[in-house]
Length: 521
Image 1 (cartoon, helix red, strand yellow):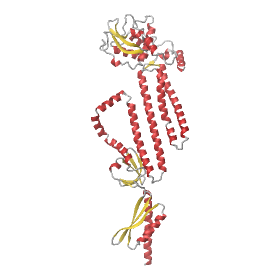
Image 2 (cartoon, one colour):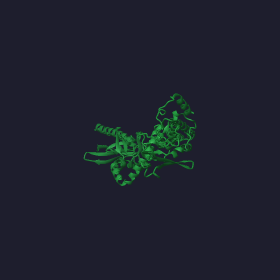
Image 3 (cartoon, helix red, strand yellow):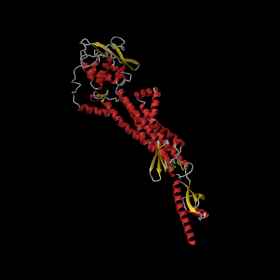
């Protein structure tokens, strides 16, 4: 209905006289007059010229490639362009027509079955074959030229009936049918853009309905993970549904093969990207939920930290894999890429060595990331000493690890470092640590009194984990002895603070003891 209204408006608004009406009369007559502007010297040039003029909407010129002997001279100017338009409409939509296979020899060799006739394609009206014939005719100047044979011209109404009528089922004015671009009429281009708008609206509505229906069920479950997954799928669903809907809406438009191929590539690419987007969103939500769960766990919950580390790395590996596969699937729809792929596989021996040397570092980093996720030499939150720097594992990526140092600097280390070089992991199997405080005192300091004071300090300090608290004499010389106070805490940060407090209070105790002894003397 919309196209009918547009057509009626265009008919009323457009002037009665057009450029096509002012064009010269067709040169195809009983004696085949010559038109030097047209190249009909070979079968291929005849078909190329016919399709070129048709795509440009100049059906009067396209009719000059038809043998119109069977059309009455009085009606040739009106019927010729109409027959050319109907034939081009069908030929542009047949993937079996291959111009490269048509002879470009003036004699028609080697395609000619006889000396002057070539079959370039075969259509079917039901079960009856309709050959598309090219025939060599002698023109008024005595030169032989190729035309679409009169037998094929006579069957154009049959071809049009078999592959028509036009799908919208309403008569269209010339203003919507005669102007063509890339072999498609104006109403078809209106349909292409209109279908895109309709597909977008339907995709939004369908995605909203699906998400709402899914939320109805997810709200009844105790977990909120499924709610986040459903909400994250909204936009990817629009892309997937929109691509499928748009492809279905294009079928009734009967577009040319070249345009259909381009639009199929676009919709196929959108479909692949939408599915990949959906998978990446699901991975992101899953990792986010695991991170939040691990963050709520206590500092010594190794199971949660291990799962969090694996989830982060596997998400990155899966994201790279999904993106790579999606890109490969998109590119493999093009024949050129497939041919290049076959050629690369055929020479894989040489190319494998070249690519291996060129991408050695990059591939080592990716493979190291996969190995790292399985071996887990460090986990998220582990406290490590790397390159003589103490810090905590803050971020683990596919190719590098970020260590947050004690002074808030960040040390970025290649992930292969943790697989190839030694380092200290203070929380590998347990987060609690034992630290030492060394004191050099003279022989007058009573060790038992120091041990009792250490016990009092530890019991009064909330940083102590109630596991290790002892004093040992580890060394001595002529004037002093070395006391080592061992204390433990839940993690490195707490241990550092506890050691500082113990050192301060033991020094105060020793000083008080020395002062008291001096006062007695």
